[in-house]
Structure formats: C-alpha cells, structure tokens
Length: 84
View 1 (tube, one colour):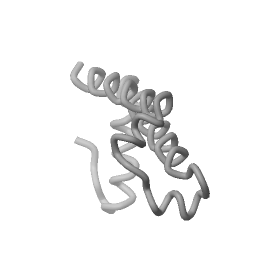
View 2 (cartoon, rainbow, N blue to C red; view 1 turned 30 degrees about the horizontal axis):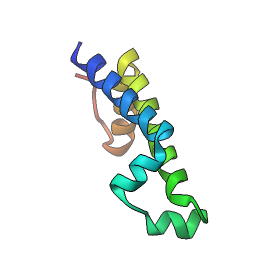
View 3 (cartoon, rainbow, N blue to C red; view 1 turned 90 degrees about the horizontal axis):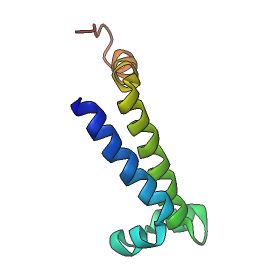
View 4 (tube, rainbow, N blue to C red; view 1 turned 90 degrees about the vertical axis):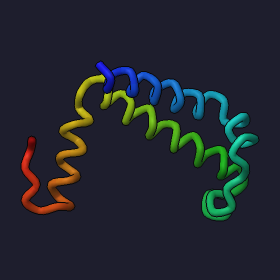
C-alpha cells in the first residue's frame, strides 16, 4: 500500500514538472549544462525529461513493476544478487 501511495505522489510531481515547467524553472533556477548542450530553452526541456522519468518510475511503483526493475538493475551491478 505504501508503495502505491509513493508512486501516486511521484506521478503527481512528475506531471507537474511537465505541465508547469516554467514554475519549476523559477523555483529551481536555470541549468547551465542543459542550456549549453540542449540549446536555448534547454533547461525547460531538461525538467520535462526529468518529470517524464519520474512519472514512469511512479507508474512502475503503483503497478508493482518497480521491484522487478530494481532487482534487474541490481543483479547486473552486483553479480550474484538473489531475490529476497
């Protein structure tokens, strides 16, 4: 149950980052790396990409896929990792 609540909160935060990017840019400030690599307006694109990623992870958390996803990554990083 707790995982679903955290997932729903993540979906809300991610959606707000995509929908209200200007507000997040004013709150967090400009990102010099994004402006340099992604061009003018790169900061807003960067925040939209981060928000989309947060939404996807939130959906994974709500549906229960996140456990398998994290285990798959951990098993490749830490060879011999076994499920609990």
